Image 1 (cartoon, rainbow over the protein chains, first blue to last red):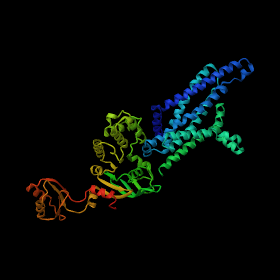
Image 2 (image 1 turned 45 degrees about the vertical axis):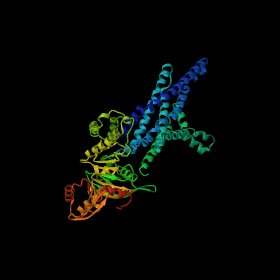
Image 3 (image 1 turned 30 degrees about the horizontal axis):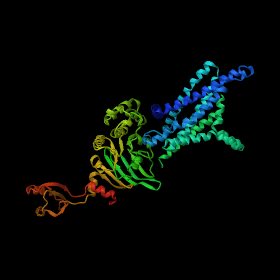
Length: 255
Length: 309
């Protein structure tokens, strides 16, 4: 535990002493802020139009009309920025040869991986927590449902955690950060759009592809539906990424 | 303290280390000597647990490197060939991180860092970012990193490469001062490094063990057994040659390199007599050195492939 903490501390410091975390968080907030603003403006005009008609007035739901699309937008931005957050983690150690220090210290590969992974998760947490500012406005001027919002955030966090598992794995394969980022981005995008192939596939493949796709599992969560199968999906995805990373690093000694 | 038996490492078809055997006793500094690509770094990486071996055994401080890697890592301080530094950290931050992963208890951490900073002479750069300090200091930070958990064994891979002559001397003095209780192995392709800092050497070439032993053993076992001196005079005349020839006990005198090689029977030592003669006849002594192969000749001969084990 102490070893994991040591690596975590070092990685977190590394994110926040270099400009990386700040730039990524800054860009992320600008984009999500823009999406939030657009959605709220649209919601406002919609509400005003619908206010003419008492029947439609009932249909207005800020969770459905603002938060659900906002979470979808954020998830796409995560798809873009997470490869940039994870590409450095193991690739750079190899590049500047500090991996030799880590692997000759009395600390296990698993501890190294977990320390780094948790540091990345911490940055993700900070990023998402900062978008909580938007909700101050919606709660001040409206009445959204808090549990549904939290459920959406949980979805974003778990999805980000799964992305980071993949990112860490690709970072372990190469010493070139760009290669790691491109491979991460490519495979994440592929998993994202996997369900497109499901439209024309047979029954078995349709279910399989739908199950494997990031999108399918996320949709429920943004609407406030907490389904264990979705949680299991993201957690197992993250676990699989970490497991592969562990295998890669363990096999290094034998090459 | 450190023992290697039949150690072999293959990278695919390339054999980096081939059936290596050597032993280093406690409290000694030994040099792992060989030209570039001889297998020095590979051997050290295996000893530190960074790489596995294809075959063979290695024990460090009574722990088996392959069976108890974690115990070995705790007693070893290792300076890799390229110093593993994080350029964005300050020297103190970096040592703090190393102290953490070397599992120094929190209560002793500060003391360990302070002590290491003093031993390695880093007081003046302690607060600076590693990317901004000079190469000599980076090497010192590397050594500090290896020392911080007060290891019984130090493994230093080319600790003086790329430094200027003054820095090389400083680092050598630092290494010598670390000797005491510690067992140290350092690798180098420079012979002078071994003769000046080490008690013994393992000479390898192309992954093969060429020779190993203490410096005296190495010189003794390979030196050509010839008694005599090589002498260089201001005026090397035939008359001088004749005078030497007439000395009692001298077997042979022949001109060589602008001087004379004077040989006598093994067991005798005529150095005093030769000197006396030179002074009496006012020949002007420029140089006098004993015959026989020194370790430098030996090393050159070994790495040019001239001498098997």
